[in-house]
Image (cartoon, helix red, strand yellow):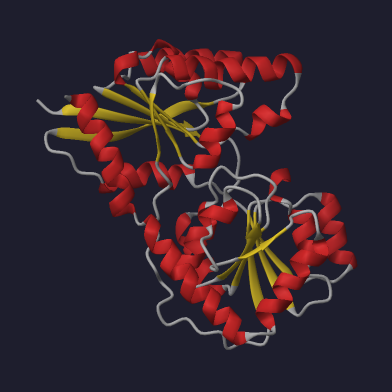
Amino acid sequence: MKKKIHIFLRKKNSTSHHSIERFTFSIAKYLKIKNTEIKVIKCPLTSKGIFNRLYLTIWAFFNQGDINHIIGDVHFISLLLSKKRTINTFLDCRLLHEFKGLKFYFYYLFWFKFPILKSSILTFISDFTKKDLKKFSSFNNIENYVIPVPLFRENNNNNKKKINDVWKILIIGTEKHKNLFNMIKSTKGLKVELHIVGKINKEINHYIRKHCIKITNYIDVDDNFINKLYFRCDILLMVSYFEGFGMPIIEAQHSKLAVITSKLEPMNTVSGKEAAILVNPKKVVEIKKAINKIINNRNFYKKLIKNGKINSDKYKKIYINKEYEKIYQRLLK
């Protein structure tokens, strides 16, 4: 009889573009272990409100496998699961820095403290996330690993060349920590087109209209469309204040885009040595200078693309999924 590996995945409650779903399905699709069935178990309700979360915790108990792997956002469903069969993968701790008072305490206990205590193994998508969580909770006595998000996007830009006068800049994500306003301000007066994935608020839309910034906005798009955007664009602008990993950096490098990102962890490490321009996310002038450096120097642009492709190859799914295979096999034994 086949052993069952259940990877629990949240139900999305927004139209924002996320890598969690692609990450989860990539493990289930490409990982092959003899005499096992790997299945993604999608939560039937969104993680909203006490009733939904209580229901999901009980629902998870009745949907346990021989291994239960929880990837991001719904760690609280660990509470009734078998400790010896449970793996929790933590993506980031951003909200621990933002929440205050009782909201912080509730979130800390049910998304981090209790799930850690109910885990046999912990994994983190970056060394930054692991170190960040250690500021709030100890887990030295629990087996844990840093395993990056795998690169699962096929390279569709093998023959890509920059031939247009107008440079196309891709921005993925519009949440507050993505620093959208500063990135848009940095393009004022430049001969560029912005392709932005995610909802744009009224204040930023007003600024865009006032300064005649050319943009195309996309909301709730699928992976195939994101792949097309990587093909169409020349530069990825991802100057966030906070990321758990920053998968678009790797995807863009793999698709032969030049990358401008934050000089903050983990983005400065993930982007690789001399494979991206690192800037201070608070300084609009610095971001603008980086864009100009790329569009005014074709040789530098080509160098970034070459080094970026080399860096992105380190994150191919075949290598990273092998790490999960080792963990699964050890728990099954």
